[in-house]
Length: 447
Image (cartoon, rainbow, N blue to C red; front, side):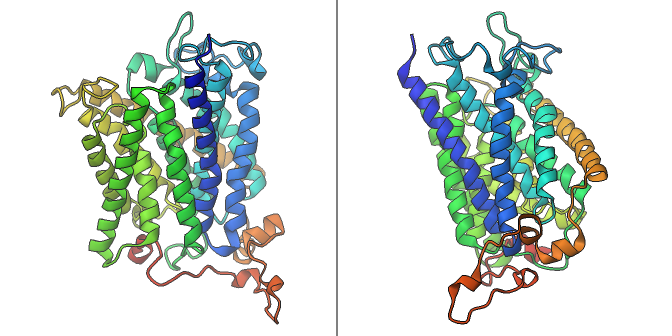
């Protein structure tokens, strides 16, 4: 019999997570320069469209089909086109229709792909991005989702991280954030730096968009984390509270770093702290107490605020800090499970601090390292092949003119329509401006 309460919760959570991709489009769109805003947002919407289709055709089957390769891959043909699932109500969590779970996991796949786009803002061809998104989801995300999220069941064999390694990743610290962060680093290296990187301050052009996007991400993330309980139960409630307080603590940590380092705290720092806290608590939200969640969030805010400046020291152009926030935050949150997991939390795991055992810690480290290495290596190959064949990066003159005009034949802000003698600036002059002191603090600490 269908459990209508749990089904309603999972469908609501899926809708919340779906909203996160448009929220990400606003968050990323506000952080780029005015001449790139449409392209940046289109990369998120393009991922939403493409991965939705691929997930139904074979993505779900690759992620959650019966294992065909030692815990590495689900059978891509078992549920091809979701055949045989429309009337199945056995579900992943007693009584929930399988199609509800299919929809919930689909929006995770969509968001993970969209996250990568922030690392290559201002310089990637939209068509090449769409090719990359489809190939990357197929070769990287769908298998890694099998590793992490596919648990053994009746006559079903799942992924190696979930079942053999037994690392804990409640909602996607490895499969989503470390995966996307490592991929973003690889693509940033393949495409190279933007024109003027390290010499010009490339400020966000619209901070209200960034704040709105961050708010939508925070809102949707309650579905992302609490929905991963797959039931409207105590686990979901604990996860909800942990997600709230970790994010609040991360904002405070990020703003404190800015205040000490730069003399003032910024709205962009607050928005970035939101995402840093959400990323870090994602794998750990079922394993920690609320106080432990505050610690994880606060440390994430500090670590990520410092980590976003590493791109200037090492010379990789991670445009919107996918590496500094998602890779670093995902690594910290995953490892923190082994350090701070509380046996009284729903996961019931013992950690180094609570229980004195390092057993879980090494499992967390191995899981995180495996996903990082696999994602980085395969992404670098995919990106290099695309760059050398159809071309991934736009030309220098096109970058100067503006990717919105060159690639999409549109402008994010049509000032000519204002009338009264107003004239639209050339796209080359449409350089983003912002109030003094609101630029990402790391722009002030460029090498």
